Length: 109
Image 1 (tube, rainbow, N blue to C red):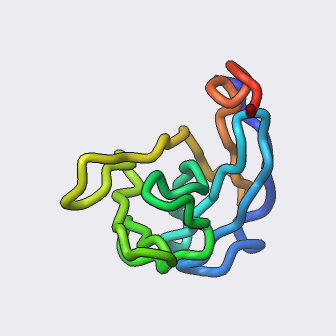
Image 2: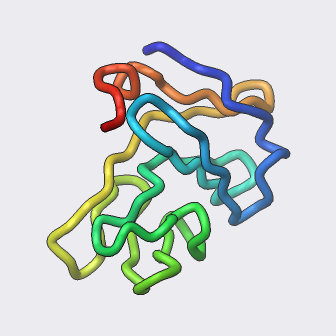
Image 3: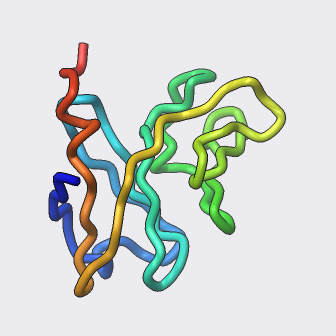
């Protein structure tokens, strides 16, 4: 894996998120627990809602525009035939590391 340091875990409030720009588009980093983070596309496939501005509950995020709920483990929307891309992420020594392998495969259109 090609780990990229994207910041300190303390920079994201508990049950909060931050958006980062990548060649693939914007990725949201969600902090669901003291040392638990997830990374996924920032755009809801339904209406393009900014998921980093959604409500984080458990290991899910609810889109702020139309209330679709996404599992942050799989990216699958609950009760819908839709999903968002997810990306490997880890926390080491208080730093959030995002795997840049998939992000570098293509550029944003």
